Length: 277
Image (cartoon, rainbow, N blue to C red; front, side, top):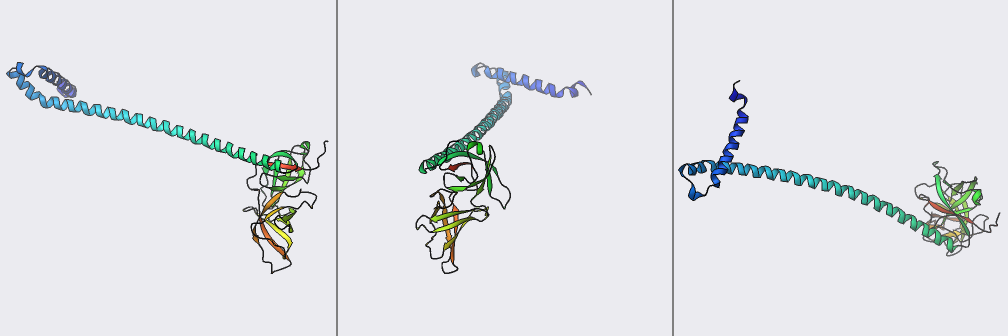
């Protein structure tokens, strides 16, 4: 391989560079001062100069475009990250707002009833389908006793069935072994609220009310206070379906608890006639 074959690319670049410099030098001479050779050189190098200028402009345009695209991508990544942070902050604020609303409703409920309430948090949920029970973070050291009623801001939740020093187990009103004496607020018709082990809608049955009693859909059911467990007037639920009065001795109705038994977080253990220990 001879010298020209080995360095032909480098020589070509050098010639183009020299031609560019010569073109620029020729075109810097005023037209009226150009001689015959200068004019000829200018004529010959004009296309080359145009090509070089166009190439330089194209390269500059591509570079500027790349820089602009890079900056746009960085900006988009920054905006996306800030958007994620804002969404997280909004979610946290919404959680705080929901908790504040629950606590306010609990406080309002406490003030509406002449009872002593012990605040508690749900720390466990029974996973057995046949049992509807929750565990609270209070026990007999907090003056919680077996049989105490448990409520949330909307209505009755259930009753305490087991206690330890710092924990207690609550049987929800939807538990199949749960029963409580209730009455229709509108007509004062009495019946028994029984759990149905329904984990989808957590419905209860309003049973043993005489078929002649007036029980309608939309009626509010509250505790009667005639048993030894629940104070009178605590909200239980609303009638969502009433049985046919023409069949059987008793009228049966379906009741949806006011308390959302599937989403319990903060509750109250209701105490009445509590003496200092």
